[in-house]
Amino acid sequence: MLLNLPIDSIIKSQAFIPRTVFSKVSPTSLKTRSKLAAVSTDALSRILDLDAESVADSELFVDFVSGNAVLSGSVPLAHRYGGHQFGSWANQLGDGRAVLLGEYINSHGEYWELQLKGSGKTPYSRAGDGRAVIRSSVREFLASEAMFHLGIPTSRAAALVVSDDPVYRDQFYDGHMKTERAAVVLRLAPSWFRIGSLEILARNGEHDELKQLVEFVLQHYFHAYITPKEYGQDDYIQLYGIIVNQTADLMAKWQSVGFAHGVCNTDNFSLLSITIDYGPFGFLDAYDPNFIPNSSDDEGRYAYKKQPEVGFFNLNKLREAMLPLIQSPAQLDAALEKYWNRFYRAYNREFMKKFGVIREHQDSQKLIAVFLDILTATGADFTASFRQLNLLLLAEDVVQIPTDAWALHKASRHKKWNYFTSLYRNIALDIRLSDSERINVINSTNPVYILRNWMAQQAIMTAEQDDFSEVNDLWQILRTPYTEQAYAEKRGFSRESPKWAKYLKVSCSS
Ligand code: AMP
Ligand code: MG
Image 1 (cartoon, protein in one colour):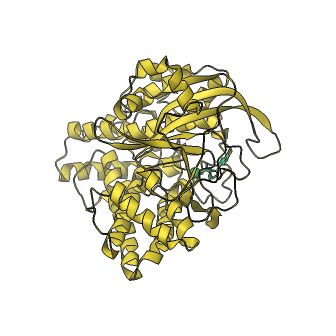
Image 2 (cartoon, protein in one colour):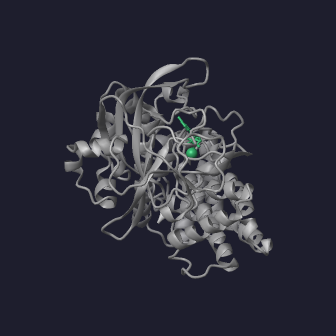
Image 3 (tube, protein in one colour):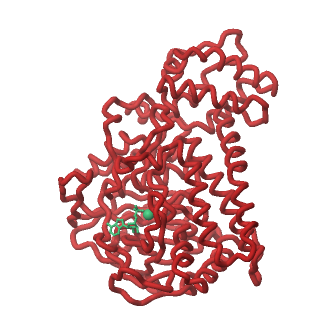
């Protein structure tokens, strides 16, 4: 299907390649020994219909993920897109180190696009080497799968291959160049198109290609919402409205698990509103709305609390990109205006679920606000505080905090704690919510385990010594994040993060 879109065959790198959506490329083989460091058996079996065990022993599979073997019939492509980076129009970016290998319709009838990340230079590599290092690839592999199991729309990671090929990176942009090792991730998504995919065409006056791509997106990814036909104005506007809603929902979900993406540029925002391009992301430890996961983001443009606004900003850029196709722009404006209402409704719903409350109540906003105020002031852990609400019994006269609820003990030092518990209890009483029903919802909404930076860092340090057992252990734990697991408990993964975690820095370098 993708091959029906404009494709350029100029293989060499160019500053600007007009009027195309893709360029033909070939992945560059890894030169040294490469090995399969991790696989997601879930993704392999459920999405790719592959038997994970036989894959692990298959040289062909390692060659495939390494970019050393291209399957027959595959026409590898690099996608041309643009983007607003940190608020400014950056013009052409494109897949500088990712290669789209093709499409796959699986035994469940689902359509997936396979991509290698870190598989060498493309015409869009600019000054880059087309490679990715172990640390960023491990983070992308683990985060994609962890987010999926948290129920957040995301791209997936099927496999991680590492090699001895040297890659040179100045990790903190401070003049300390280091030799690292190349890794490749096999990523899967129903679509890799981004807001920047349309922006590049609109901003360069390539309106025929813009119309073609918008209609392709409608036909191939939104046919469940809008029946394929001769598309017209109403369909473009409806498409935009759906993306506005879905992005608002995604932002609410990110906030609800304390996920900060780190680089919310329009080139990293999917048209299907799935989380893509994991770089310097971070999950909140102590609750801090100003948390900035990316040490290169000096202004905190993409701080945790800013993400909903950034979602709006990016959707506005999508609106601008669609304008050349639209005769009555007021309809697009009207669709965008619905963003905040949709976001707040979703945010309220997601957060109330975290309290175990799934019925409406007029004080729900108050409850969320007061609890988050308490967490902000006390610096109590975000994930654990919510999870430990399952230890409170609201039916009792005095709401006691059991000894093992370490996060709530910290939160309860706040002067508003008693006000919070009485508000919480009143809501439960009003809607006749029993403790057991509430606790069940809490347990299936609030994870015990998230991919905390320090956990990822430990796995990376051992991975860099060629030991991938930690990566695989974390992957295994994060597959069932709502269930307490003996090994994870032994490792302290549901405890307060160690002090050294505060000093960890993650930059854009990858
Ligand atoms: P990112 O911040 O990872 O989303 O990347 C932003 C842009 O830079 C995209 O166009 C990437 O393809 C490109 N890029 C990032 N790293 C490299 C690299 N090592 N080689 C080539 N292009 C890169
Ligand atoms: Mg990107």
